[in-house]
Structures are given as structure tokens and as C-alpha cells.
Length: 253
Image 1: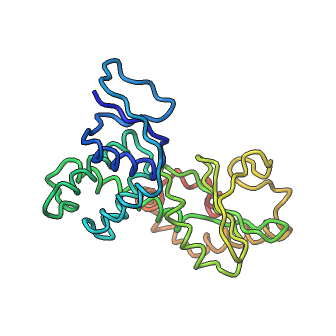
Image 2 (image 1 turned 90 degrees about the vertical axis):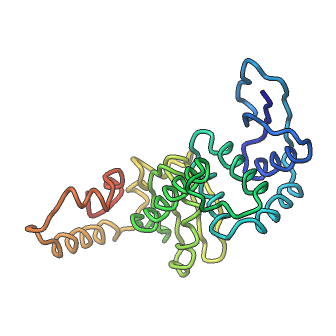
Image 3 (image 1 turned 90 degrees about the horizontal axis):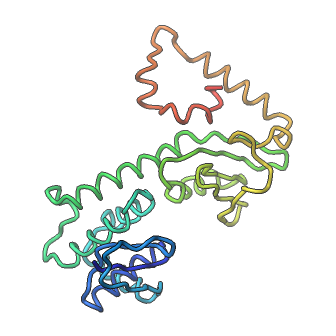
């Protein structure tokens, strides 16, 4: 069994592809720095992430894949599912070695799995855009948080940059303990893990704006006023608005 060990970054994964073709040996498993090697390991290659190598692989993929195909690679990487990196590696190898386009070949098990996984991550990014509810802090920052099944926040952040260009805001993934802060000029990645700003997935009530509670009550009143009680369909509601997000929605409190 041939093992490649790398730093578990996307750049490192593309470097794995470069090294495999350079060495003409292809790994059976991809492991991170702390992963235990399988019992019967014939060869172990330590991959050192190299931007030049990864860029060369990416440029090659630009010639072989459409924009949607390249986006699919990013989506599957952000899924953080078990062995997603090995799936991507096999897919890249098939794309590279094939004389025809295969990115929509549903008969191939790996291609089908890539497409299905990418769709799930894309849907999670859409949930971020739909279900984030902002709360205003005392210093004028709008804060919104969700706990996401996939690492979809990087895919949604540009929507907020363009949609709320005149406001300072933070969008946050509670599961992964990171988010993005926009200060009207730039967007940076942040972590609030040790700041004491949050309780139960929301900003501490002591640092919210004095009018925030009033606006929340107004929104709840509006939500109740437009509801038609005779047409309430909990099953359909759960289908379009997954219950795991309800505790983050003001109107559901």
C-alpha cells in the first residue's frame, strides 16, 4: 500500500497530485500529519505543500474542467466528509487521464459521488443566505450565527459583502468556531472562541444594542400577523426550513 502524507490543505492536496504524476506512483491512501499508518504500508511519501506545484495542477484542471467542474472540487473539499480528499484525488486523476470530458458522467461512481456531495454543500451555503438572522451589538456590528453541517460559510460570504456593503457585520459558524468580519472596507476571518461574546449560539444580551429587543419583538409580531393559521403545515415547513436552524431564527423563538 502506498501512502501520501500531507498537511490536509487544498494546496497540499493539489501538490499530492503533482507529486504522484512526477513520481509515477499513485497513493492508495492520503493521510494527515497525525493519522496512523495502515499496518501493511509498502511506501510512505511525505508531501510538502508547494504553491507553484499546486498552481500548475490547477491550471491543468482549468483546461480539462468547466467552471462548474472546478467549483465542484472546492465544494467537495469544504464538505469535510470522510475521505473527501481521496475522492477528489481519484476524480482529478480520471479527469487528467481521460481524453473526453467526464465531469457529468453519472455512470462513474466517483463522479456521481462528487456531484451529489457538491450539491449538498451548495444547498448548505444557500441555507446560510436564507436563514442568517442578524442582531445588532452596542457598537453597531450586526452579528449572525448558524451551526452548519458542512463548511459552507466561505461559499456564502460574498453574498453578504455585496448585499450589506454599508454595514459592519459578522457571520459565524458555531460548529467550526470561525467566521468573517466586514468593516466596510475589508473582510477578515476571525474566531470568537475565547472572547466571551457569545452565549448559547448568540451574542451576549449585555452587549446587544438597546433597541435590539424591540426590533426582535416587532419582527415576531410581523411574522405572526402575516401567518394564516388555517394553512399552517408543520411538515412542509420542516421540509423548506430544516428544524436544526429554528433555534437561530428570531421568529421561531
